Length: 417
Image (cartoon, rainbow, N blue to C red):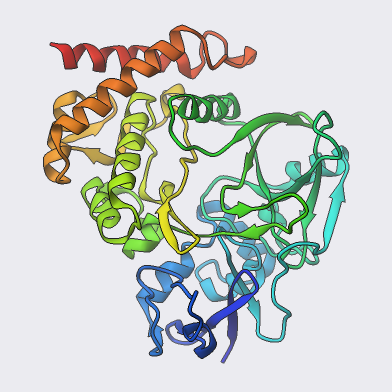
């Protein structure tokens, strides 16, 4: 029976065993460590092993989804439905601090590991090949896994001095990546500029959000996102920070990340924060701000896997915002909300009344919700009118600002009526 050692950074925390159903058991050494913390809310620290669905849901949440998953499985010659086989082959560098390695393999590196430096031509060639070879599956020494259906590449970025363009390297043999490159899909022109702008707007409004910038590599616009689940200081090795997305924490598999398909609701998400966050009062406000921001920016795809907890320094706090896109920029995309706001099921419906309904459902004080909604609307309107987040030249006239401003103005007007 096959087994994979499960690590958080260099610390071995347990073993995942394949079989008729997956089994995970914590190592006695990890349980005895005073600084130990669980892999998941659904996998609390205990000596008895876990089996079945609770194990499958957490570990499946580390893997790619949809077409990238199918193509990786085809390249590796394994079944797309075999989570264990996929983790065995690509689970060396996942989201957060988790690494899965064959038991005889040395622990993952926390820095100073093997890197394969790439020149611009090599990097462009790799990105061009990603649709055919997601996450460079099958390449010697490359064992990368990231959840989601969009093509992406974990890399290491390093600069000789601040003015220089960063050099890019592939992390090999479990070396931690520092950034993620997401090439723009041809079917969604302007996606990179859209996401960079939305993340910059979030930060301008005072929300914690991932740092991102755009860069054209070869002929392809790319989003380069700094990993918030990595920690480094001058002269210190990069260290992974454990994270768990809301679906994993609540026991929902990736295939059920949308509420309309049986996935979590916003009421579930707020209840989760009350139960699991180390600072629930603060994180409830952060989630509320994220919901308001998604509604105002026309983001219909703000599902539960796009919210996570970050484990650091003995705490569990809501992670910075990521994957923030104004999906209204592409009329062919659904405007159905991933999680309803009150009774509102589409972007066009959302009004202050629906936020009032949400406040009742999620046990939030309506005066606090109303104040956050009004403040974010006002700040967003002011920021866009002052052009504080310049729109990329290639999207001028059709950029997210032109879609978002009327939404924020409408919401604020309805609040005053």
